[in-house]
Length: 173
Image (cartoon, rainbow, N blue to C red; front, top):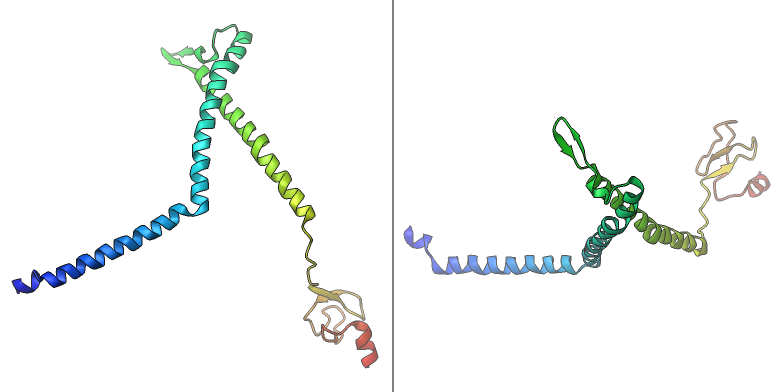
């Protein structure tokens, strides 16, 4: 019994299967990482973080001091109020809100709007596929009926097959 438990060949076989399984998993992981959209997403996150730093600095160092001139404070981030002996730094919150608004505006005007314009231009240039009709007119009452209908739902007239035109049906009678 103990000999079966510690059989070298069986243990080595488990090791080989585990090693190959691990390599297969790593191969799948490598394919996932090198897929185009994952790399694009990673680049987008890195660029977004760098852009966020630039916008934060712009708001903190340029815009809030300009707003502070109108509010008669040195810096907008220094605005505070006290309520029941608690200090609320709402100026710093205003900095974050301004940063968000500026980031959203830049993303909208420099990314979303141009891409939408490109999509619109592409849609106008792309030839439109003509869709096959799904209904036809009843030759007797001129109401619209489904293409595969054999009887008109309105006048109960027997309809010609869908591949025949009304003129062909009239000459066949």
